[in-house]
Image (tube, rainbow, N blue to C red; front, side, top):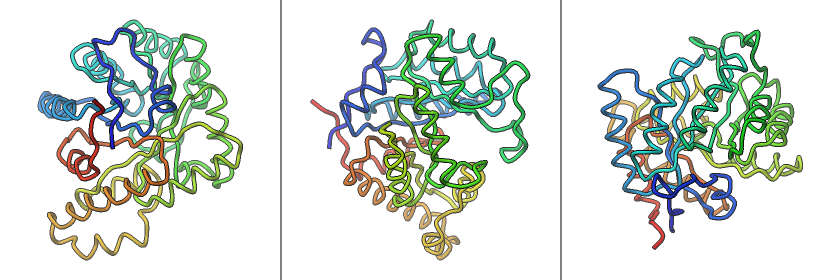
Length: 306
C-alpha cells in the first residue's frame, strides 16, 4: 500500500489537496494543533519531524476556539510550508472574526504560498456546547466562509463532516442537508470529526451520496490511547462513544497499557476496513504526539511510492 508522495517546500506552488484526493487515493495525512507553551512547541516540532519521515500526503494545523490561536496557527503553517517537505493545510474558523479579519488571515496564508484551507464555523470559546453568537460583522455558517475564500483566491477547500451528526443539528436528515450545502458552496473535499466505528463513516458516505453529493470524504481517525480519549471525543464531537465498544475498554480500564494496546489495534482494524471500502483518505488526529500514529501507520503497512 503506497502513500501519495508529498510535495513540500521544494515543489513551487503547493499542490491542491482536493486534486491529490481525487487523483491519488487513498491519501494519508496528520493533524496537529498550535502550541501554547514553549514546552508544547518542542513536543509539536519533534512530532512533526518524526512523522515527516513517513511522507504523508499532507498535514493540517488546527485553529483555536474563538480564534485564540490565530497567529500561532498561521505561523506554524507558514513554517511547515517553508522549513519542511510537508504540504500544509491551515484551519480557519468564523468565530469572533469580522469578514475583514477573515480576509486578512486568508490573505496572509496566500502570501505564504498556502493554498489549502480547512474552513469550519467553529465552537464558541470556552464552551463548545454554549450558544453560538455571530460576530456583528462576521459570517453565520461555514458555507459562507467557503464562499468568501472562493471570492478571495484559488484555494483547495476542505470542510468538516460529522459521521454521527453535528452536535447542533436537530436530526441526521438536516445535518446531511447542511453538509451538502457546504460542499456546493465550493468545498473540494471533507474531513470527518473523529469516530470509532467504521459503520458510522459508511452510513455518512451513503447518505451523502444518496443526496446527490460526490464530494470525497476523508476519515478522521484518532486511536484511543487512554480512557481520557473517550471522554474527550464525546465532549468535542458531540457523539456518544460506540456502546458496543465501550465495555471492551472498561474491562481493561485499570491497565493503561492494555487500554492503549486495544486502542491501537482497534484503530488499525478500522482503518483496514475503511481502506477495503474505498475510503479516499485517512486523516490521523495526532494530538501532537507521533508514537500512536506511527504504530497504526506501520501496522497498516503504508509505504511511500517509489
